[in-house]
Amino acid sequence: DNYFYDPRPKVPIFPRDTVCRNFYSEMLRWPSRYRDYFSCERPADAAIACGKADWKECRFHMWDLENVATEEARRLCYAIRDVLEMKGQFFMGRVRQDVRKAFHKKHPGEPMPLAPLRALGYTSAGGSFSAINENGK
Image 1 (cartoon, rainbow, N blue to C red):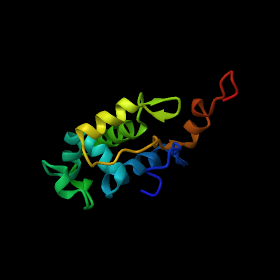
Image 2: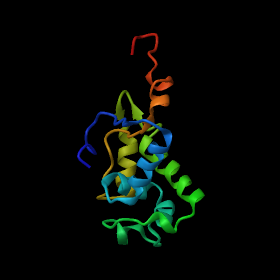
Image 3: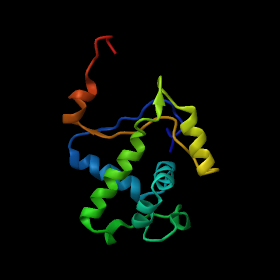
Image 4: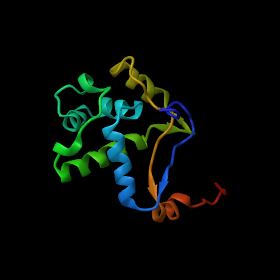
């Protein structure tokens, strides 16, 4: 939560892809503003992860994913990754104003991150994610 409102993108890099999946699993398990944002964007998935129809009832509690089937847990990890990447929500390095207004209108009082969070494995971090374009950026 310390970096939730930091406008710089967050890119934790892990040794293996399985550790990346575990990172997202732990993001689902423990209460945080990132999990709240995911839950606002995908309430049906949040309900599956927490085991209750309304995720807000247990937003401050640890969510036990042991009762979720392995394939479903993997799908939930991909879902939280997709939400936290915030694809298509930025223009010139900032969250688009219309996206922010729409989120706050739909979810008043709920937090929205200022930048994406994307965990990578060493193999991915050294590939296309680290490429330099023709402008040198």
